[in-house]
Image 1 (cartoon, helix red, strand yellow):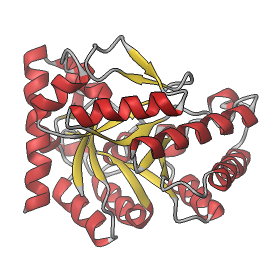
Image 2 (cartoon, rainbow, N blue to C red):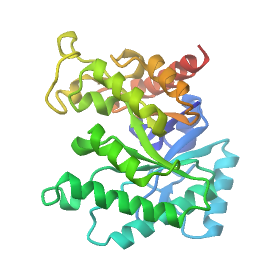
Image 3 (cartoon, rainbow, N blue to C red):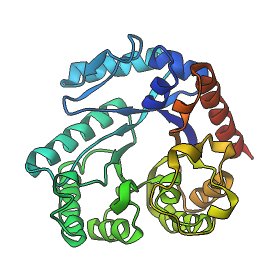
Amino acid sequence: MYVAVRDGCLRGAAFPTLRAGMDAVGLDAVELAIDRQMQVVSVDDGWDTHVALTSDAALAAYRRELDAAGLRASELLLFNDFSSPDLADEVAWVVRCAGAAAALGARAMRIEAAMNAHQESWDETRCRAVFTDCMKRVLDATDDLPVVYGIENHGVQGNRYEFLSTIIDGVGSPRFGVTLDTANLYWSGMSLSEVHQVIGQLAPVTRHTHVKNINYPADQREVRRQIGWCYGEYCCALPDGDIDIPLVIEQLRSAGYDGSLCIENESLGRYPETERQAMLHREAAYLKGCLQG
């Protein structure tokens, strides 16, 4: 395992560029968000400058930029919606992103669990069936690529173990599992002990991670809370939360996971810019220490 960070966290911490942020936090592995136009953020030209990865030449040039900066794209972050009215186009976009991931040397892709287009009209059984079918089509179209996929436990539906496990079993491929978000389970209302139980269950099928934490009041840790209860107030830096990150690492290591621990700090906005930057550096150092010890 190794430590990575989401590009969006670096932007949220007000680093001027991707390269500057990575240098400051002391990491070389970054999860890059990719949009519908196949665009990712520039390495050196600021957050509002994007690079379109729409050709082999563009992919090769962007990888050279990363190499020159001493960086690597460890994963790509997708905001797909497998309830889109045009599922063929949605699947085709995910397949194109997989090709980009392979060309950049990224090992994994984060897959969105939310199905927003039919959130009110589809029951969970239909959501699971459609999602499973879409992922099978993606996998069939990319069976020659060394890329794995992880559905993130994200949102109300996506944090239901039954939803995730049924899809993973239905897809039935070692290249597909979860993007394990450590805090989203806690956000969903689970007690702290239940969070670690579910992480243990998901560890064998974890293909990618988002690592973050929450520091709830002591009387709220082992009770069922309302979904999202006071998250903005209590989300926090990794070392300061209730979730036992060294235990999570041990659960993943015991299950054979060897991918990234990708920092996703959603508390940055509560702090001045200078503190945000120091916080990300502290989190990177903390995770490195956990891996060593």
